[in-house]
Length: 141
Length: 82
Image (cartoon, rainbow over all chains, first blue to last red; front, side):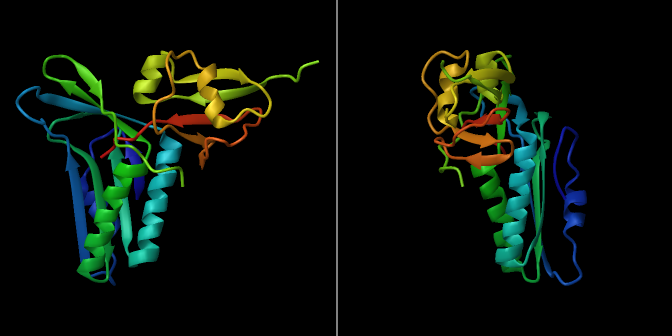
């Protein structure tokens, strides 16, 4: 399961997608929209994406996790508006043993944040909005 | 006679799309133009942002990638998903 969706994500469904009778370890990372401090509270994040390339990159991440860790990885990311407290991304990874499941899950979210063409815009309680400038990125692979 | 310009479809996202006022536009560039040459053809003031990356259709390309007529090129600013 690799997807971008404008609808709420059910982490249980993402977990279910990586179940495997040969896999004894399964980890799920849920990234939630957060208020981000009292100074200028955030009420929601709005995600934009270049969907065909984002999906291709997410598939590459899942494929690499399978090669490197023998893991099954599922990733679902929201697009559009996500209110504080809702999941914006869910990464699930299963592997024969826990070390590989943890590593594949962590790699998945780390690589997503580095390379997948998705952008967030914070909507503040004061009515303002601001695009996240992102982190400097590596050269194109 | 000078060579005919080629037409490229450009995709812009997030803050860049808002700066341009559009997320998709057609621009003309000289034959042999590279991905990095597209910036000058866009209706956006100022220098290209740092760390801009390019995808032709859905493949990443280097800034010096030569464009072909009919290419769709996405300009990818630093990402901030998750």
